[in-house]
Amino acid sequence: MSKTADFRAIERQLAEQLAALERKQPSRQPFSEQLQTLMREYSLSAADVAAILESSQD
Image 1: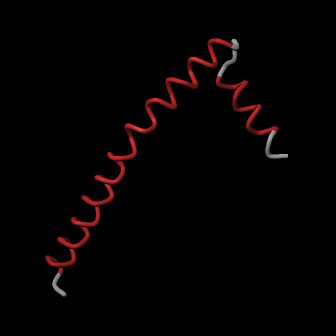
Image 2: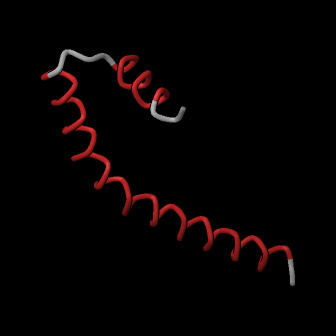
């Protein structure tokens, strides 16, 4: 396969991966908003949430 064909194949793969990432992005927004609402409601910082998550791994 020529270098140009290799480049085009990699370019297509990258475009597919970027499209998949874009499809996932909107689903993160509601989660982030809900998490921030809960953090305000319970007066927790990001460090507090991280500590809770780390302690649950024990």
